[in-house]
Image (cartoon, rainbow, N blue to C red):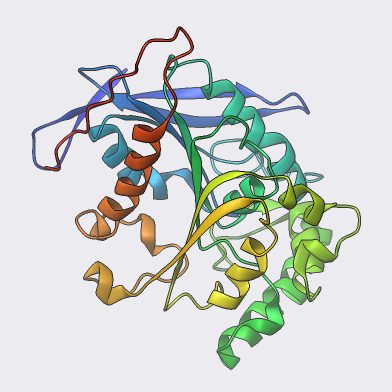
Amino acid sequence: MVLRMRSDGTTTVASEELRIQIPAGGWVVGTVRTPADEAPRGLVVVHPATAVPERLYTGFAEFLAAHGYAAVTYDYRGTGRSGSPRDHRALRMRDWMADDVPAVAAWARPRFGDVPQLAVGHSIGGHALALGNGSRGLAGFVTVASHAGVTATIPDRSERARVRLILRVLGPATARVLGYVPGRRLSLGEDMPAAAMLEWSRWSQLSGYFFDDATMHAAADAARVTGDVLAIGFTDDPWATPAQIDAITDHLTTARVERRTWSPADGGVERIGHTGFFRRGLRDTLWPQLLDWLDARVEAAPAQKDGTVSLRARKPRR
């Protein structure tokens, strides 16, 4: 176990690597961070975006741990540290959502005692939660830049053309020829399995994204999701426009959904975009606002199963 110090030198965070066997086959590799000197008062699992490496979420996870939470981050199978994309070439995006996300949630659930459990899903990680994967027993979950990724809805013409080239031509071509997609070379993030790219390409051409894929049963799954949901978007995100975020949350018909759209000015930065929320520059501005939402769900969580009242004192901001 490695002890890490917050940048202000006041709070230590314990960090430990995890390996989770996925029932469908293979392993997920990640990291669990906890407060070093006290038991966690809540658990947050961070489900990543497509081809986004786990390291992007390091600062955010340490921030959560410094404020009393156990925080779990990881890479999907076939990306980052969780195996070669060539060795997982048959993995689809739906497999990450239906297998990896609930397996990590199930691993984390019993390990931190009877504390409230929450989740944060970035892009496809939010899709998984919105379809009921990994959301059982949660006190609430947050989606960040989780949208219906329909290429035709990208507002900027040049960005729309670039994404169309990648998702319809270069990505599928390299997937078929190489058995994986060289995401780093295509500016997509991490390399990824061939089947994931081919499914992403197909969904991006459907007006309702995966809701128009009859094999997904997505609308019915989303309608069964209950509880509190916070859906966050950003004014400068070139892909996740408010309308496309709503295209996901509108299907959460039995959940209590709150929508927030933040601008770079709200965070005191020049740019946020699709992945910038998890960069450390927002630690003192937007991260505390999300933390407030998580804290409220922890404080409202039921008493412990043994009938005693769970005292979850709120840690002061530092």
